[in-house]
Length: 387
Image (cartoon, rainbow, N blue to C red; front, side):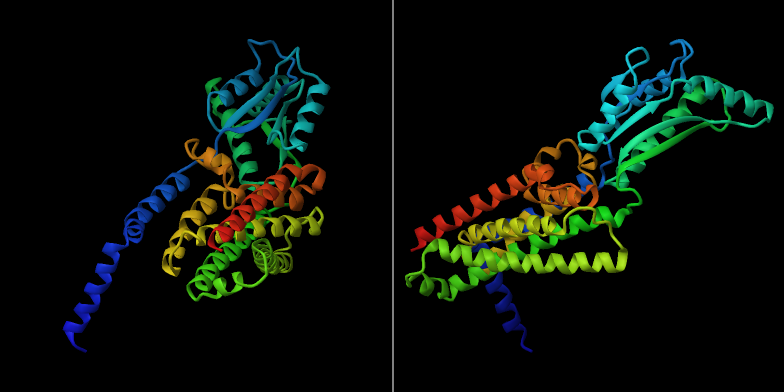
């Protein structure tokens, strides 16, 4: 091995980076971009979880423990109270209406205080002091159990508020109040049930996007694409053919993931499996179009690879794949709603865990169809310019 040859090769590589400003910028800015996104995302706590409160407690306002608990909940950011029905306003109708909002996924939970909540809580405290039998007071929470992290955050926050109120009222006894979560969806669901739909969407995205962007650049650099364009085949047929091929690849990948999750982890699938696969297919077609579009900008395979983390990292971190969107910092949450993977994951979870049909997930499906149509349309225009 000759040192001068090694140094010559090193100089050549450094010189090529100097002339390729895009690659040089990528090497400098991409680590900064990644550490910023990771720092914001992993540092976030779940907050602003939308809930309704229906307070049926009949105790006088100056004696009501439920009012103190509601005030404490409202003073923190974990739960965001959408509607609060207080004693005198609340009734069984409000309980039913709030439960229906949970079932429609408008809110995450409905917190219901029983009419005798304060009375039973005080009686239980007195029983604890006297060492007699304790009949705890119940606080019921009707929760959308789609996301176990959200369920845990809601229950923990209410238990914290109960503890704070009782300590403030002058007792150090164990709170004689039972928080009873009643899941509207996801009964018996575990984290893998929340996790699997996100992984399916992510896999479809990575496979179709990465395959399409690399293959298109390679075929262009090898003049295969030029030869194809010289035939009578139209640009739309070329794009549609690639979209079908890569969409099927993403679909197969999702079937493998789904089968593995069912066989090994017994994941919950409440809805129609064909609707699950349809969402994956449409999403994969859209990502194929995105890969085709970005490949027209790249001059070679190395530049094509640079687009991957720019697209993949925000999608992985901000689309709700591994944690709920409520855990994403408010500064970054608006970005989540511009990421197609967000709607793919949300649609898959609604079908697989909530058991929803097309009549309920049509907004997510519509957004994915629009995404696919726009990406394929722009890809066709790019091919027309090339011809």
